[in-house]
Amino acid sequence: MSKVKSKEQPVILVTNDDGVTAPGIKALVEAVKHLGKVVVVAPDKPQSGMGHAITIGHPLRMHAVHYFEGIEAYQCSGTPVDCVKLAVDKVLHRKPDICLSGINHGANHSINVIYSGTMSAALEASIESIPSIGFSLLDYSIEADFTGARKYAGILVEHLLKRKYDKHLCLNVNIPAVDASLLKGLKVCHQAYAKYEEKFDERIDPHGKKYYWLTGDFVNFDKGKDTDVWALKNNYVSVVPVQFDLTHYKLKAKLEQTLTKLN
Image (cartoon, rainbow, N blue to C red; front, side, top):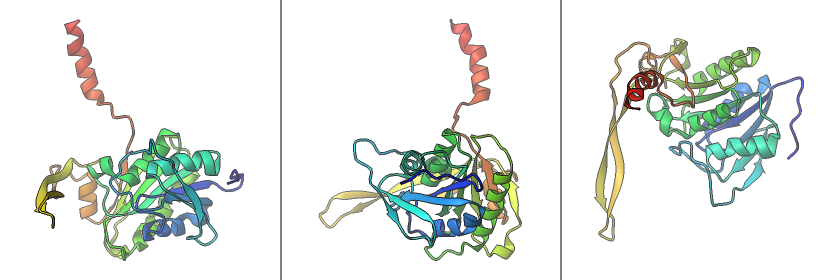
């Protein structure tokens, strides 16, 4: 694994959480391979819902694969976050110019960003001062049509590579599962307050023992027209800037005024 050196073209790290063989990551590579030197480091198996998990106490394994024509690629036994860390330290030996995660099979809007392996990979890059984007298509099918997602991935990545944004920039981009001709364009949004009203379906296995299957319904509590949920419902590609700083600044200011009185 030699150091990637490129003065003429940007280095683009591509990863995901659906696994290196998923159609979504192939679509993302196709969308951006003309924009720079693409290197893929992705999980060797699906890692959906892993959030920002990292591997501790077990060895990580990584080896080269040839799933993408003309593209340097590796599969890793770890999580999406592990993939970003290993890519920077052991494959690139430098920080890429941008990190792209996806294209995920399924939504990562609203509360999903907390659980998403796709977005955690992008946020890990952001933590390391690497501008990043997580892409998700609202279609879980292995046969999903990525035509519209490829188009807007190419548009956004080309835009970011040509401009200087904050080094911690991280965008959560979701694309509606409609024909590309029906997409109305990009809409910058805020993350909706929407979540799953969950319950566990209790079942009995063949040995007579109980087990549980997580189920639930997605409920949107945010009726504004500037949210990712609204944008996607109305056939816009939602773009939500996200950050790893979880500080609640308004509450911080209030607590500074009230709690200091307790001293």
